[in-house]
Length: 181
Image (cartoon, rainbow, N blue to C red):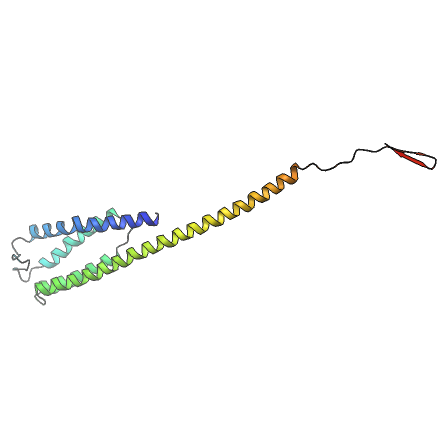
């Protein structure tokens, strides 16, 4: 896949993530845990794994999104999911509050956004280097073709220039006298 189209697909995936994934996860979490959520999103069902359930919903939706973009690996998403699940377990056990969980998730999300921005920049740099390399390669090809063309013209000119072939001579010797025709 060309680098520019890879950048376009990357941007498309990020846009879809913002537009579709986040609202879908929030909707599914509210439907699934409607009896356990306070209006602020915190749990009123202490001891039940609702935060872990929310993270599983997020993971299911992430995997659906990644299946549309198989050219992108998702080890970062796998790592984030592990962190999200560890935080969710702590929140479900009452070790951290809802507000602490949200802050930690936002911190992980900010790190993820930074990584995504760095990856996009890396892709753009690769595109620029590839374009510069393509231009140099095109120049090298043009120079090579020019040299071949000039050599071809020289060979053609040499082949088309008639060489002098002397006519056969007949010579006669008459005593001390030589006569050639």
